[in-house]
Image (cartoon, rainbow, N blue to C red; front, side):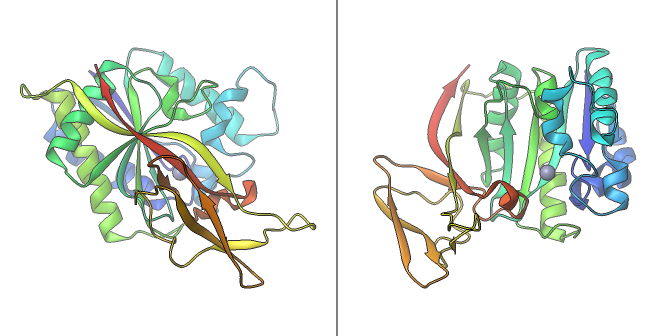
Length: 276
Ligand SMILES: [Zn+2]
């Protein structure tokens, strides 16, 4: 099977950059039956240690039909799309987050192979969680093939190689490749996922600036169950902001630095079992 492994889609996420530039030969030797290709996605953004040069590459795929001659990432998205479309392939896109997410895999499609690999991964790695992030507009790189997933590990600062995050990323990558190379015979054909259902934004003041920040009791509580009242924010004036859920939900991407421009504070998920 052809497997495309993408790193550095965001140029300041150095874990992925190191994974595809430093470990390609190690993985090729370890998995000789797989046709592995490692790609540094956004070398221009990596050079300047920024998430992107002109636009977010991991959102650029929804604009492929447009003409954007001045955008480096638009040009790069077209090249990467052609690479993916050349042949049936499994796509793995490596990311990191400043949120306390631990080891996660993000699925954009319910393709049975994605669910099978995810089940096997969670059987072998009890601390790895699966997020379902449906992408109907196909904006993500990993959505460009029905078969594929993102790896998302944190917390790590941008532009930093943090050993736990790097080694966690490599262990998930190895888990995915071993599930593709030699599938387990002891699967139950179902997998627990955290499905993204709602984005929560920072409260705004009149001048379009945030009026609050993440509460200290909420910071780092990614994947911790919320059921009823909770306190996600504190205003800069010193008041707690309380919110409520009507069911058990789980926050992820709490205080992700890259989402400040969109004023996105965290995303709520519902736990589900997906059968395949
Ligand atoms: Zn990223």
